[in-house]
Image (cartoon, rainbow, N blue to C red; front, side, top):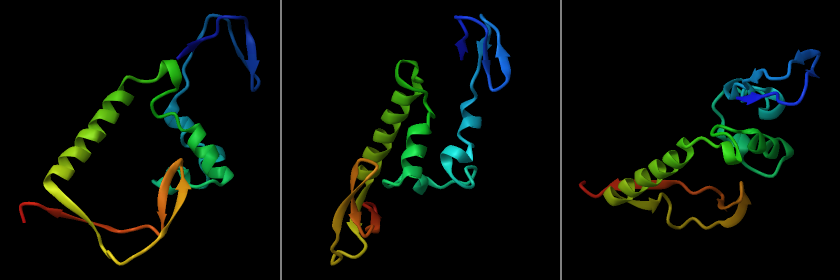
Length: 128
């Protein structure tokens, strides 16, 4: 939520009076095909991966936790929860390549070194 502190302004043909609160619903902005490609309502994490202009635009437009100094405190909580989940998973399972003979090269996607081709993993519970 923001407040227009300066003066009355016009945006897209609408006048926003000085002193008015402006609320930008992130859920609505995340459904904009201009930034998230065709079918933005469809679950498709692949839209954020790679170096294409559309992938870069989608990554830079996603603000699920807000941005910078106004970032939601839930971001840190979610990060800790993910780490706790991974630790709990690795304490109870072993992880192996589905095909240990498979070789690949590396490629950077979304700033992370990714194997090419993608490797399939098998998780085995220590109890079994």
